[in-house]
Image: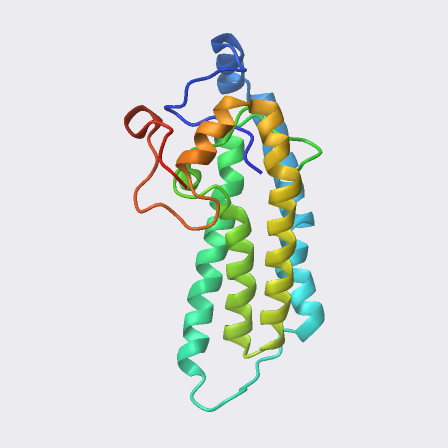
Amino acid sequence: MRQGLGAGLRRRSRSPEVGRIWETDPVHRAVAAAGSSVFFVLAPGVVVGVVPWWLTGWRVLQPVPYWAGLRVAGVALLVAGAAVLVHAFVQFVVEGAGTPAPVAPTDRLVVGGLYRYVRNPMYLAVVASIVGQALALGQIGLLAYAAVVGVTMGAFVRWYEEPTLRRRFGVEYEAYRRAVPGWWPRARPWDPDKDGASTPR
């Protein structure tokens, strides 16, 4: 879910004229925002919200004594995950020219914001939000659900998303993939002008 362009990345598949049209076209931006909002409800909204509610009823349990510390950690993880999700979706509207949905991708490779640290912040945020609910609610069964979601998204990235981005963006995506880890964030944001594209990951 990364089809837009970062500020410093050299553009290969999009002319400056097209970029300026996107940057100044409020209709295009509004359509992208609406599409991203719909996808946010249908994808993360269901995976992070509806399914955990269906599995647990959001009932608060006390699986073991002294769970309060883990409950606080769970709330913090849930809030952080939700914030990262919102940021990632907004990045597609601000930086890209489409939505995170595979059926309506952007025209440019999204590499700005949190995508300068890790290639899959949206997926990491989804898993973090589910784990956060498991801890906050004391619903240990949600940890198994989080594991299933994580494995499924990892397979999707490996077998569909990465090959698709490689075909669409070629060396541009390969440079980004080599420099920015998929699942473990960099200590500092990637700057293609300063860091180049040869950092082994």
